[in-house]
Every structure is written in structure tokens, then in C-alpha cells.
Length: 538
Image (cartoon, rainbow, N blue to C red; front, side, top):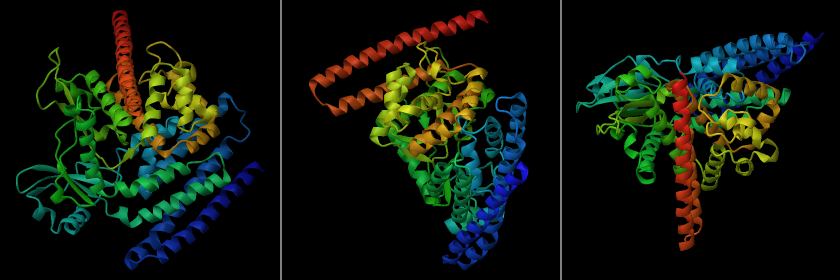
């Protein structure tokens, strides 16, 4: 009886979304000015919508039917839930790859939501969405190059490798050589993206809205809205090129101390359009290629510090943040100047790729976010609450927001010990957070509804950086959080100085600066002693 009831609900979901989606797709097609595209969409949209509906209904039915009657907290329910999570994740993975395009982008987003999505989904999406992206055929690439640059690849370039060296959800990259002899990377957009993007937005949004209507606690509307806003920008490669230039300008003007240590490939503007981007080719390993990095004479710990400082400067001082810093978008090479540390170690230079997804933080959001991280690093419970509330978490969900940001339970967040926040938590911490996420799912979705979308992107950025740093070092990186503490504190101090330009404010600024440096010095000594203690106990 229960099974029939659940099946009726999921059948309604399937019929409703298919019927409504058919109408939405029909309206989109009817208003098209391009008959060929409209005809193509007539076949593609209903098929994708049907797949979406069947997958959503099947996953919902599997959860409802498989867990029916199993008592909360029982070992049997936990075991069955894990199995259902795995089946649901595999079904969603298959849907993303069969539909392609923005579905893969959505899958990549889900793979970063450790605080919201069950661990099984996170692992499967992370494992597949970055490594198994679709490829365009050489004929399709030939078509794009000819349309965008006015000639075939072997006419525009002296050499053009038909086999791509990398492929992502929106484009793929080919190695080429210009007629002037420069080796370049040519990023070519997948041809199907512009054909189906508008229809994909409509169908995905429809599915998510319908699921939310039937199951109110399932609310991923913010994620669809974010993808709907960001994908058109990511599909315009001239926006990406301009972002890379602006990013480097920000480091030169606002963070000159580390400007030489951060690099973006040069853009060849005469060989770039909205659908094709030609850049300087970078011969360098990814940041998670530990063996190659060590062969270059670079210490992984130095690289962790540079990654942390680079993105701390972006978030807290520039307010213009690269929001897709996964390992494939971060390369490393020795500093071209050849400068070394006082111990003779080669210094790293971080190379930032894929500048399509950036977010700008307005002044108040940037300063409140910096003040929040300052409070987190220094275990300031009042400061944490005050700034969480300012960012929209409210008096009731500030502890949850702090836990999501740090991937730590509240008792660890406010622990006054110097190592209370680390890049890589213990299995116990992770299990506690997963259990918390499962138990308080409605509160988490409510929190995500309240927070500005730009802060949700910062959460994704934090998760990416946590994964990158975790791949470089086995243990916790205490230095990373000291760097975050220093940069966020400096941003807050600088904002205080801008508000009151007087002799007294200048004196107060330098006193606060001296106190900050003293506090950080004490924390560095404490970190060194902890590291020494760990080394001696090995």
C-alpha cells in the first residue's frame, strides 16, 4: 500500500514535469528566429526533459520505498540509506553525461557541496565530472575555428594539434603554434552549448521547481539560478579574457607583495572571439601533481601557503574572486626570476587558468566576510555571530554557517587553541558534520536560501581550495589559517582607516597593526612548537 502511494506521487511528478516542460519547450521553440535551431530543439528538448523526469522520479521513489518503515537511527536504515545514496548518485551521474552541457556544470557544483550533499554524491561527482567531460570532434572544432577566425585551423595557425589536451564541460583545449612561432593553447567552445543552453535552463529549472513543490525540503533553486546567471558569462570567452587581465591588475595594484608569484597566461586578442580563446601555452604541472612539483624543487608546504594567500587576497582585499579553483585550473612552476628562499628552496609561481567564473563582492559584503574569517581564526564567538548575522545567516543559523565555512562542529570553531581550524579535518569531524547535515537538512536549505548567492560561491571556492590543499599535504596546514587571519585582519583594518581619515585614525590604525603583527608572531611560534612536537613524536 505504501509502495503504491509513493509510486502514485512519483508518477504525478513525472507526468507534471513532462507536460509542463513540453509546453515550456514549445513556447521557446515557437518564439525562435532560427528555424534550423528550432527544429533541432524540437527533438532534443523533449528527450532531455523525459530523461530528467524519469531520473528524478526514480531517485525519489527509491528513497521513499527503500527507507519505508526503517526506524531512524538504526544500523539497518544507515546501511540501506548508503546504498540508496550510491544508486541515486550513479543515476544522476549518468543523466549529467547523457545530457551534457550545463548538466555537467551542475554536477561539478554538486561535487563541491560537502556540507549539503551526502558524501556518496560528493565522491562520485568529484571523481567523474572533472575527468570525463565530453569531446567535440575535429570536424566540429574545424567548423568553430573557421566561423570565428575566418579560416581553417591549418590556415590560421602554423601548426594545430587535432587531438585536444584537455576537455571541460563547456570547451576543449588544443595545442597550436602561431605563424610567428609562439606555442599557444586554443580553447574551443563545444558547438552544442549555444544550441541547447536556453532549453537546458528551462528544463532543469522546471524539474527543480517541481521537486520542491512536491518535497519542500528539497530546495536547490538557488543552484539553478546561479548556473543560469553564470553560464552565459562563461560561454563568452572575451569575458574570460578580460577577467584574467583584471585579476592580474588587481594583484599589481592591491597586492604588490605577491604579484610576481601569481600569473595568468597572456591572451592573443587577435586570435580570440566569444567562442574561441587563444592563450599562451603553459608547460607546468597541476597543483595536485605532488611528484612533479617536488622534482621542480618546490616544497608542497610553500605552495599551500601561496594558494592560501592568493585567494585570501582576492576574497578580502580585491573583492574579485576566481570561483572555480579546482586542481585542473591551478598550475605551478618555479618563479621565473629564479629567486630562492633563505634556505635555498625554489619559490613557486601559481598559474591561474579558466577565468570564466568570477564573482565581485560589494564593499560591505567583502568587509563583513573578512571580519567573519578574522573572528573564526581567532575564536571570537561574538564576532562570528555578529558577522554571520550581517551576511544573512540570522540569529538562529549563525553556528551552522560557521560550521559550513570551516567544516568544523561549533565546539571546534570556538576552541581557543591555535590549531582549532585546519585544512583537513579528522574522520570524526567529517562524520559529525555529515550526520549534522542529514539531521538538519531543512535548516541548511533555509540558510542557503537566506545567504547572498555571492557568498554561496565563496563556499564553493572554499571547498575547492580545501580539496587542493588536502592533496598537497597529509596533515593539517596551520599556516594557511594564519595567512587567512592576517589578510582578513588587514582588510578590516584598512576599511577602518578609510572610514575615518584623521590623525587619530592613523595612529589607531598603526597601533592595531602592531598588535596584529604581535598576535600573529605569537601564533606562529605556537604553530612552530606544535610542528616540532609532532616531528619529535614520529
